[in-house]
Length: 145
Image 1 (cartoon, rainbow, N blue to C red):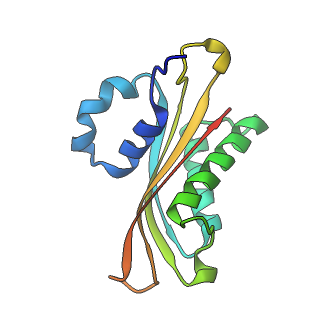
Image 2: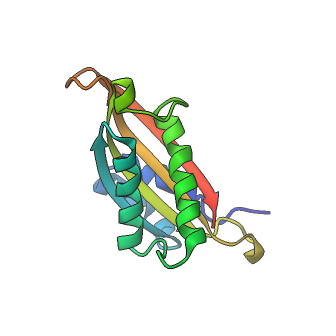
């Protein structure tokens, strides 16, 4: 099976690059659905809600179809594992995040039977809730729909 579009790579680029830096990737972006956003909080539920809301508002997933929301939720959790180094928790561990995120939906495989997949990427900072004491972080999650 050959991959057509690398939705994970696109999600990471969308989360981390500026609009000008993304110009080179516009041909690849035409093959997928995507959205971008920002989330900053000491509450991981607010981060999850921000991604879910953006994906629904931008019609990346349908709120009428449970499996789409479910797939997105698992991709978000997987991406948060990377951001938080395996311990999904923020405020309860005295840390805060400031993240840019992207959601990409596409068909990464040549075989139609493989269906659609969703990728979620986060890029930003995590650290103590004191300005200047945070460091960079990145997370990526991919799930089939």
